[in-house]
Image 1 (cartoon, rainbow, N blue to C red):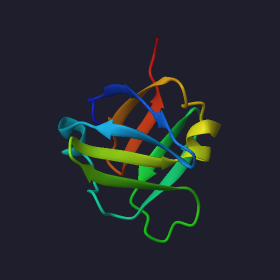
Image 2 (cartoon, helix red, strand yellow; image 1 turned 180 degrees about the vertical axis):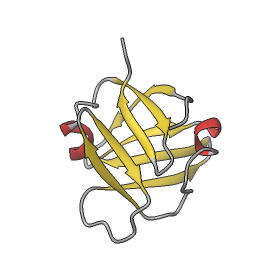
Image 3 (cartoon, one colour; image 1 turned 45 degrees about the horizontal axis):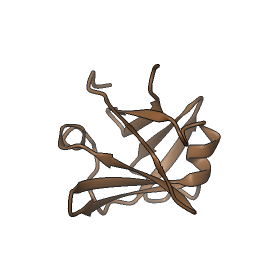
Image 4 (cartoon, rainbow, N blue to C red; image 1 turned 180 degrees about the horizontal axis):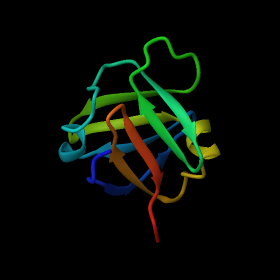
Length: 103
């Protein structure tokens, strides 16, 4: 796991939650925009991983005018208690951990 962390917050949409991904975090990820991604639920966090055959919750990393944005299945974010909270993005060897930021 990298010691890099970025604190931000999810934007809550009808079916998904989204968050900007800064360049410093993107460079440490084992996937890029356009890759098929899955979401692995963990206690109080979601971990986004490259899993093309995954049939559960999904995530998408998309390029925008302002950089990259990560879209995560809203239900997964809700169940991890991440909506309406500050979240920390932390790159892992096998994905990206999104967890509640420490107060």
